[in-house]
Amino acid sequence: MTDLSWYVLYTSSRAEKKVAQRLQEKGLEVFLPMIEELRQWSDRKKKIQKALFNGYLFVKTSRNQLWEALQVPGAVKFVHFAGEHATVRQEEIDTIRRILETGVAVETDNSEIEAGQQVRILGGPLQGMEGECVNKGNKDYFIIRIPGINQSMMVNIPRKFLEVLG
Image 1 (cartoon, one colour):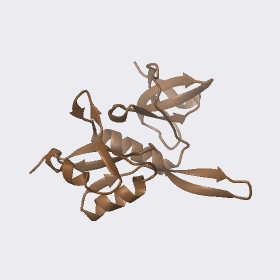
Image 2 (spheres, one colour):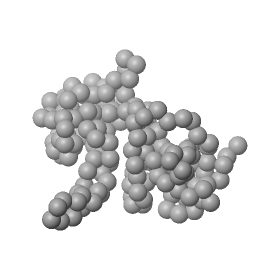
Image 3 (cartoon, helix red, strand yellow):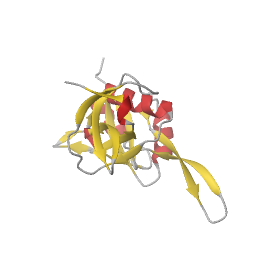
């Protein structure tokens, strides 16, 4: 039995959905977190599905099959971090899934974010989740760091729903 890990695959611009589909057709487990965004044109509004992390998707595979995954058109490279292939823990994948399933508004941020207080969410769709809270632009955000891609997911949560831990 080979060890399977979630690896971070970088795709060419706006090719995330096609690459995910091609990898699934090869029998690989793929996670492409998507969010709905309302786009405004001069004559109409339209809801579009877009990748939560621009140009990234997650592939559950073994290290010796990474090369095979790169053979699909649109796949660019696997992300490296300090000389190693970047991997994301199953817990982080589950957290991203849970947040997206609730439909709460999510922002992503790839800037350096100061460490925040450890908190537990007391109410609402994310009740019971534990993580970090940061204050940004006068709002409190529950933050989920995804170190493998130097990205963070941020969910605006009113302070009254947060319990500071420790």
